[in-house]
Each structure stands twice: as structure tokens, then as C-alpha cells.
Length: 412
Image 1 (spheres, rainbow, N blue to C red):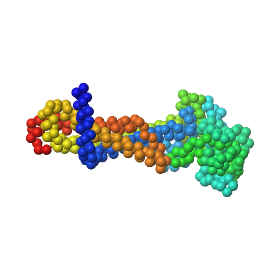
Image 2 (image 1 turned 90 degrees about the vertical axis):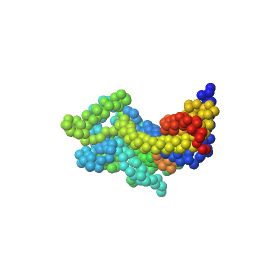
Image 3 (image 1 turned 135 degrees about the vertical axis):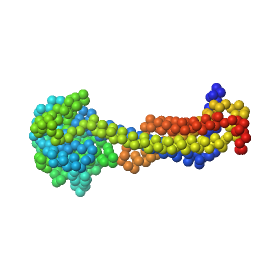
Image 4 (image 1 turned 120 degrees about the horizontal axis):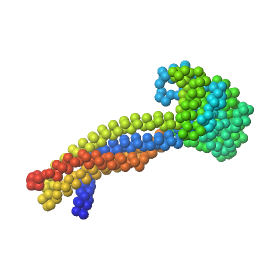
């Protein structure tokens, strides 16, 4: 009970001390505030991006993969030019060979795309993604209809001029009405709307709903059979994803007569590859943040130690009085440890609040997704309090070891 009372007495004394010198306390806290704000801001960006990666990047799903002519996970101009010269365009004959021989894929489809301007009457929308897709791409890339339906094999076989619209185009050209049966024009070609996709939202301020999907046969009839395409597929299940990728890779290499020592002349990407890339990136960001935060924390801790040493000198007479009326060394030690940890803990709390405001502001005015995780708040406050506790040990010990008689001789 005595220990409990002593602790709360130390808390009250620490609060009174902080209130009596607000400016000095605030200046002391600057390092801790900056460290906590930086830590939580970085964790918020990583947390927000983790959600984005999980929900948005991998439209191909956990079991999906994509084959492209060139796949650059890290931008290297020299390597890109080399691949442009070396890697041939993916083509229909190769895809047909792949589709007829692949056994570990549930679906295999073709995708090609380009930017176009879409017109409806006098209204127009620029920078629209026109995608030529095989009918099973709706399943592979998870395009769910909000109105109507996706493309069919009959429409693809007959090169029909029909289109599946993204939500942005439907809202712009046909607000509040059913778009099915209406006509839109892209590059001078009119397409009849057969379906409207459910909204997917935006990523980094770039809408994922500004698209127009037409049958791949119609697309290649309009733009030419040699126009670049990608193959996209889904493994029979997630456990066979790697085997399905290896099978597709082997089939393409066999079709292209590549030797065992020859490099792939195509690229392949999966959901797992994108997640792994993001994990490597976040590891680098986190390592940098740890270095910056560590510097701020050490600087803040040293400042707290110096301030607490100054406080001990200021209160030498008070410590002498307390010891002369029965205060134990432990009581004096507790008082200064509680004060230093509370000082830095308050700095951590201010840093948390500041980081939260920064996250809200960034999320509101920029496309960067930020989400403040509870774990970041707990880590920030706990770490800052621990820094105060650690750097307060020496001043607290110095105060607790003062001789009461010598302390009383010091002028107030």
C-alpha cells in the first residue's frame, strides 16, 4: 500500500513539475515527438499499402498469374531495351498451343489494351483503357457486373462490336439510367453496351473503373493481329500455382525452341510476386525509418537526461527536506523515474496525435492510402516512455544518493 501511495505521489509531483515549466518541457520533448511522429507515419503508410496490396493490386486473385512480353519488377532502361530487342510479341498461335497443352490451369485467357477516347454524342472521355479480352477474363480478373453481363464466346467468335463498361464511363455517359443497349464509340468504332462493371475504386488517385472491354477477336480485327497481347490464367487451385506457372513456362519455352541455358524471352508475374516485391520494399522503408527514429530517440533521450540532471540540481534542497522527514531512496528514485518517463510518454502521445492528423491530411488531399494501426500507437507511446525511463535512470540515481545534510545546505 505504501509503495502504491508513493507511486501516485510521484505521479502527482511529476505533473506539477511539468506544468510549472511548460516551455522547457515542450522543448525537451521535441526529439521524442519527431521520433514518434516519424515512426507512426511510416507504419501508417505501410499499413495502408498492405490493405491496398491485399484488396486491389492482385485483381488476378491468389491463384492467378500473367504472361507478358516484358516484365520489369525493377526499372532498368538497359535491360528494358535488351528485352525489347530479344523478346518476341506474344501471339495467337502460341496461345492456342499453350491452351491445348496446359493441364494445371483452370482458365487461360488473352488480354490486350490501349488508351482511347470514348464518345457518346457530344460527350467524350479521354484516357480510357480499351481492353480486348477473351470471355473467360471476366472470371480470371474478377470483373463482376453491376448491370447486364460480361462477354460471351458467341460474341467473340462473331467479332461482335459489344462492350462491357467500367463504372466511370457508365456514370458519365448514362447517369441514373440503364446503360444496357446504349451505344458508345471508341476510335470511330461504335459498340453496344452489354454490361456495366461494379466499381473497383481508385489506386493512388488513378481510377480502376475508367475502362471499356470488348471481345478480343473484335479488338484484333480493329487494331491488327500483331498488336501486343498478354496471357492470363488461373491455376486449378492455390496449391498448384507454382506447378501451373512452371508448366506454362516450360510450354512457352518449348514452343519457342529455347535451350536449357537460354533465358526466358517473356515475363511472368503472380499475386505472390507482387506481394513479395512489396514486402522487400517495405522492409527497406522500415529499415530506413528505424535508423531515423533511433537517432531522434537517442537525441530526445539525451536531452531528457540533461534536463533531469538540471532538475535534480534545482531541487537539491527539496530532496534534502524530503529525506530529512523520512523519504526513502526508493521514493526519490521513483519520483524522478516517473517524471522522466511521463515526460517522454507525453511526447509520444503528442507524436501520435500529430501523426494521426498527418495521416488524415495525406489521405484527404493525396492518393496515398494511410491507415493508423493500433499497434503503431501502442509501440510509439511505449517506446517513448521506455526511452524516458532509460535516460532518466542516471539522474534519478544521482538524486536518490544525495546526502540529506549536504542537500539541506544548498540554497534554494
